[in-house]
Length: 101
Ligand SMILES: [Zn+2]
Image (cartoon, rainbow, N blue to C red; front, side, top):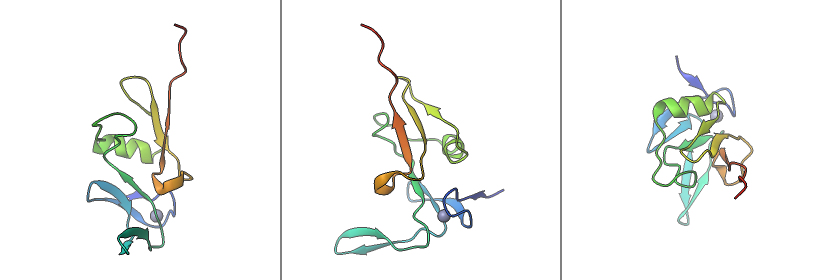
């Protein structure tokens, strides 16, 4: 069954160019700047280097993220869906609480 877009809830989410994106997501390259021109801006990149270096999500992890599950990396930092993120990354990272030294 197709995964529906968590943002607009009308488009299907599919894989393309290293990301999953809503079928209503379209970009235009104006003055060397990529701008979102579609009805929906939802997309998530498989490469999540800001979360963990050289980290590329699997399809299963991507499905879990879109379903609202929380992923955890090797040092306990979490990654989860956040539709209100600035810069259109649509995920938010949270660090683990510091332990006493
Ligand atoms: Zn959408």
